[in-house]
Length: 363
Image (cartoon, rainbow, N blue to C red):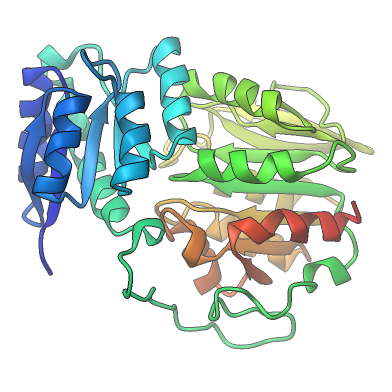
């Protein structure tokens, strides 16, 4: 397989060299060039033909957001933003994700101390996954369809990608709680899905999106500004209300606790050794253990397998389960892992997901 071709765009010579060094440490990644600002990048992309671009946000002449919008129109390809974890950096990164960037890596404030080396493995893995994203697959290249799990009543196979049983979930008893897990590509997926839900959503919705602590509140506020349902960052001890979407804060797990007829949100740092915090598995497993109501659980685009074990536990308790189809995923990792465990009732492209949800809840 040919190496992945990367173009690094950053106004800092130190940052360009640091990213190049980290990427070249991987044998399957090739840095084909660097650019010092957005204009420089736009000139080099058609010449160097990269598979993926890393893009800084704050640059002279043309900043990262302006450059990103031009890339999406003129040269659509995966873009990985390099973002600071400040409040301003979070706002700019969320705007970039809404404008077509597929993910981001943190720009540490103490780069000179060498802490940037801590993100080397994450950077390499994101470049590998995003460069081969189904969303940017070149014409004529067909997606690889996973081997179906053993067939059973009500099981939808993701090939063709538009499932034949579009009304499958809706025919089941209506759930009383809605839970979503997502990671890479999730911010854009949620910005497409949630605004399509009406104000009269009759159940609470709990969401775990892998995101730094400084990002989740601005992300919830951004979603709230474009949605009919209320969207907020979840708070410890609050009651989950119908018609409200709760985004798990970064850096802490979101658990469900049932107190009589009330659904209570609990934020807990344990398990501390979890690969992700918040974790989709932790939320789903708490629902499987505590919730006596019907649950509709969904896994959207994301790298890795977080959520698959939890969805399996929920399915064993009678939950209704959905997974995003490969064709619309930025990274077909988390939905694939759940599918391969045989715990997915229905596989649905993102553009059809809101319709399935609305039909299920009769709204």
